[in-house]
Length: 101
Image (cartoon, rainbow, N blue to C red; front, top):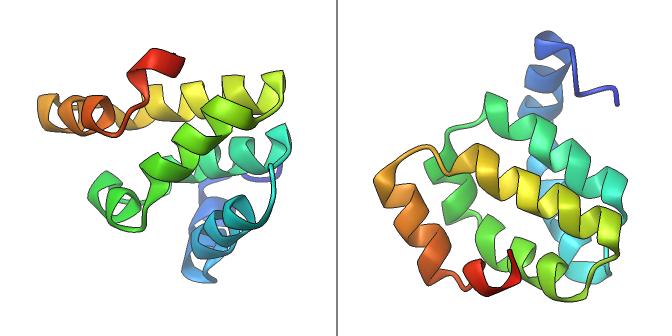
């Protein structure tokens, strides 16, 4: 919740490597909804191309496949937030997200 409403706090979390740590967390276990929600909140403060290059989409696909219902909903919401252009929507489709959405 800390990252949901404060742009300066989001920028601080991003500059301190928060996105990379959250992505590593997604690799280690089935993350709780709160971890995906924090990642979703941070996407507004980072260029989407950077998130894609860090491997965000395969991790979200994994959550859509195997996560709890709340984590799946947060992952779907994150995908919607980053799908801002035709090219990004194409990447989302190619990543395998669509069947799970």
